[in-house]
Length: 602
Image (cartoon, rainbow, N blue to C red):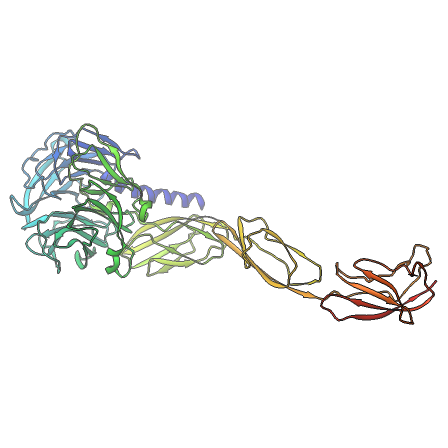
């Protein structure tokens, strides 16, 4: 079972990796390219294209280059203009000038190239590339089919919830309408889904339109008075946008606009490149509720040169820095705050320069849902949770995917309360069902044993007694009186409790101590005859006790005084006392005197 489970995990991971290899090569800027196919990233200067802004790259599922474009021309994998590839009616100097999308299916032959021209031709069009033509180098076989008039510079793609079809979303410049065109087995739908939103008028129509990889959100950078960004919900089953949340400037961000946009692969965080008087990259937490509070979660990731932001197959977000020889990089986009780790000069590009744009892709290929990594304790109830924001009808949870796939729980939310019974390493899985299809999220879970703390049973200490309490072998502990000692002597009556820690796990115990007056035993006879047996008389206590004893003869004369641990040898003033009965008085601090008698026999 373990071998079979491991194989399933490997295959699922492989499928996800293959999907992201469709973005395995990037062509952009001044003859620049990046290659992500070997696990790292390699920068090269081997492109025939100059792309001042918008650009796109087409790769097969192994990451092999097919062609690339700036919206004006298409170059094949040999860096030669494709047959018919010089007839496109896009504009290279607009934000999102071109998108390259394969026809739905496992082995696409046709590719759809969407081109955007808000200024010259004032329309959104598409052309079709047949990759079987020209000896496998591809040729444009359908040219510049019109889709809509008057687009802005924005053009985005995200998968339909069925995981096969793709939505192509454009924005109308003259109003706040969004047009979603469905690319399916039947081609591009001629009738778009139109969403008319109440947004402030955008001054110039530039700035990216980006979908979150999960397909739940659509964000648009803008420049409209004090509004620089709109975040909307996207229905990837219907293609509709709704419920915009507007991000406005404050005193720390005067005259600001948003250009570049990107999301973490789990769709938890959004990154916005802000321009204006001061360039910066901001991070926002999309898991915040209510959503109207998302703008309040802004964290400044960086200051300085930034334009396009683009998710990559390696899980990072790369940042275009105009006319620079370096790309910036958010190393860990899935982490909040400073832990996302932005490096401004991360990847050296060589002699040539980056421009404003980076390639556009179908955002869904970067989706990498995951279960939050947790370090837990056995028998501790915790919430297994999806790390990002997803649309789902239900979630099937398998807490121990590697060892027990039969134990399943179904929820209609993004979390499950569960307790692991034993320590060990687990792989939790979540099957996200939506539109009749499933995405799988994984997360490693470390379950540690809680420390066993045993202070013993409640007990009694007599005066002068003490007791050693030991927590055992643990990392640390904390007592109710503030002590942090792992071992300690106690002698005072009280209720003692301690919490011990091993890593993230803890265990506790409580011990009640009562004090009791020590019972005393005083023999009522002794024989001080020097034979070595029963020659002395003294009080006997169960513990060391402070006391004094006075011994009197029958006439009331004091014959002996004893203190702690002292014994009476049966003498009076240095001479043997006569046989008979003697009276004693025992005194202890804060106690009533005790009276008794002892007989001396010789």
